Amino acid sequence: MSANWYNIQDLDKLDTPALVVYPDRVKTNIEAITGMIDDVARLRPHVKTYKNAEVTALLLEAGISKFKCATIAEAELLAISKAPDVLLAYQPEGPKLHRFIRLIHAYPKTRFACLVDNSTSAKEISDAAERYKLKIDVYLDLNVGMNRTGIPAGFDALQLYMDCEVLPGINPVGLHAYDGHIHDVDLQKRAERCNFAFDPVLKLQQSLKQKGYPEPIIVAGGSPTFPIHAKRPYVECSPGTFVYWDKGYQLGMPEQDFLPAALVITRVISLPGPTKLCLDVGHKSISAENELSKRIYFLNAPELYPVSQSEEHLVVEAGKDHKYQVGDVLYGIPHHVCPTVALYERAYTIQKENISGEWLNKARDRKITI
Image 1 (cartoon, rainbow, N blue to C red):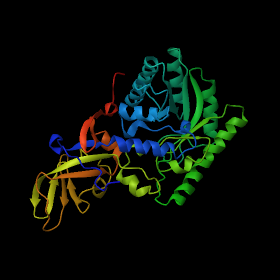
Image 2 (cartoon, one colour):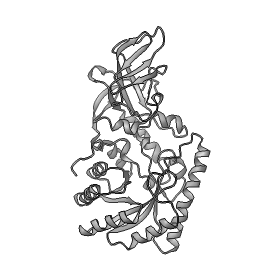
Image 3 (cartoon, rainbow, N blue to C red):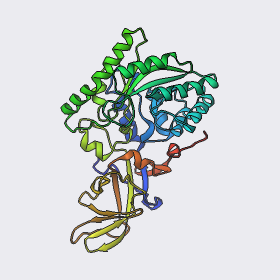
Image 4 (tube, rainbow, N blue to C red):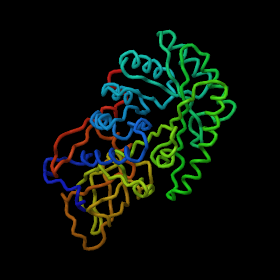
């Protein structure tokens, strides 16, 4: 594969900063992940990475029918795209619950489910569903070490599942275990931590089966632990970043050989000193939750390193006697692509080194119609 696979010939048509996507690479990544699991029915990719209908269509064409999302807009995007099975990996509260009910009514051909981790929320969801003559599938959200939502996979979780079973408006169907805190570079260590965190989940599933419940579906993991969960024949896996990949996972998950398929294009807009460049890629153009050195990596200028960033500017050190000029174009891999995509209303598609179209990131908005 060409070292300069990212080249764009008609750059004069592309204002920066811009998010660009290479569809052929997206397709290659989808082919790769379907080949990494024994049954495509066990894939439940997370829409949060890409947020558009075009990638959803490519996933559906690859035989993937189950999806995961975190917002009502993402769930609606999937329903508009005719995704058959959508898990809202969130516990809907207040207005979000009412929007979720409206979503279920608006798109009857899509099977929706959500998360629950406490009895009060379970009853609220059940009551709302019953008022609208619905029965909503729910997954018990289990805390396996992430420590943000969920209930530990022990006696209390067993009791909550049993309580959900008798509530008239909901139907417990499975267990959700997101282990996003596990991202060791060493795959063996990552597997050890993943297996340790997963063991109580498996025990809870067995306890429920012993009590006569249908075997709960288990939805587990994200991109870092995908290779581990993919080996469990009874688990649905929910990676998301694989469609676009990014520099963070390229460095941190070297065993997963996906191709970077989304870049942020930026231009040199000023030369603030003899060794420094200023680029038009600020906080509003690249995910900025990581430290300054872990935000963007330039494919055609790997020697540059950032020294400061503000809302619309990034200042980088280029060294003495550099040859960069105002107007030069840089191709950057986001360190974290998911929140970077959320900063752009559209991605420009690049095919045969030219701009071929646009993919609207419709689910970056909090609302589509509902």
